[in-house]
Image (cartoon, rainbow, N blue to C red):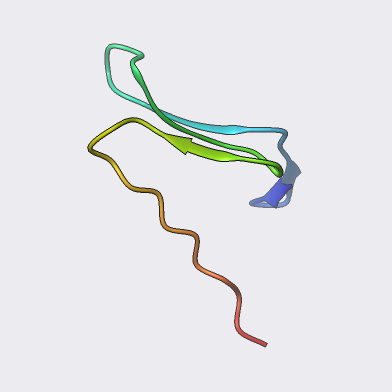
Length: 44
């Protein structure tokens, strides 16, 4: 996936203690219980 003009294989959302909150890839979106990831589609 391309984010900010850079190729990325994964986006990780972590706390300041490096606890994984969410992982986003081209294949999966995984979030920790109690959190929600919302994907906003582009409008054409």
